[in-house]
Length: 424
Image 1: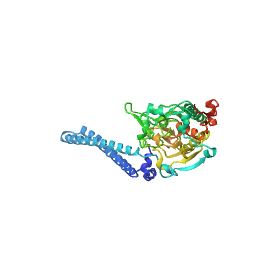
Image 2: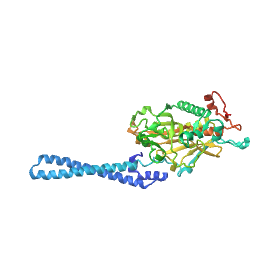
Image 3: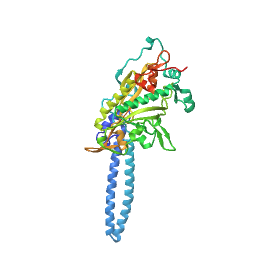
Image 4: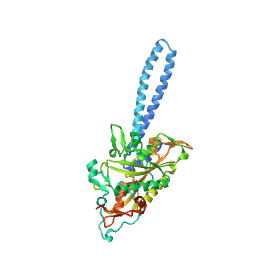
């Protein structure tokens, strides 16, 4: 949730953020009006309540006809107080509903526009020239089938479309990526976590995934639980309704968990292979810190992601994501896009978001700072969303004979093997 003081004092700042996101500016005026109505109804209630208390004392001291008149007025006031209380509650609910609908305030300098308007900050590495090497690159699914590493047919048989099995060398590759990611994160000071993949509505709502992303979330109505699309949800809610000790900050967590997404709106997109699927495993970094340190931590998370991609020896680009493509909770987001040879373009492989105090305010995560108790900042960063690094490794490191050269950083997890080899 945005800072309500900002909404009241500087509504134009909120309007500018809404405009950058491509969202309604009129919503700001509605929220300000609802806030004014709530404050007015509270004042009217308190005035009527004060008169009601005063009237009670007068009734106790009166007698005869005067007492009867006071009793009539007391009854009228009781009904009035009840109605004013209901009005105050309704106005408060309306204001809170509107306030929770705003996305985080977009940071200054974020590129404006939509999904295709992100700014490339840097390109690292040079894509291989397969033509010069004398062969046409195969896509990840063809390679995966040659290696007996990916089984889409049985995934669909067991679970439906956009599901898959990783088998043999494919399963080994994911486990190698997992171990490398967790080892590097521990080296960087993160505490390893294995969180639940089912969370309560307040955890999903608090992290901002029941707003614009609600259609992409799996819900279990009988239990009123949600399957997470990222372990960011559980890690953010881990300290919900807590007051943290500033001396313990920053808190750095890294979690491994399965993730589930409906991929709503993706009909016909990336239907081949495991690029866009309903289930995948992921290693996610998460930080709770002082708000003044959030920007620096955002750049650190991006640096960690870049280091990991470079260990996989994949050419990539760094993008400053445009304002209209930010999630509800993000004030700024950087994506890394890995090179996909068979598509001759860069595709998203990691992402890191600075959520400032937005999620912490919704989840009640605070710290006792020197100037009082206030929300912390939260940030998240994908270190390894398994399916896509697997795709990038298979395609970028494939050889003419169908084998796949293993990046040096992964070889210790394969007993020193240098390549994945086709299964006859």
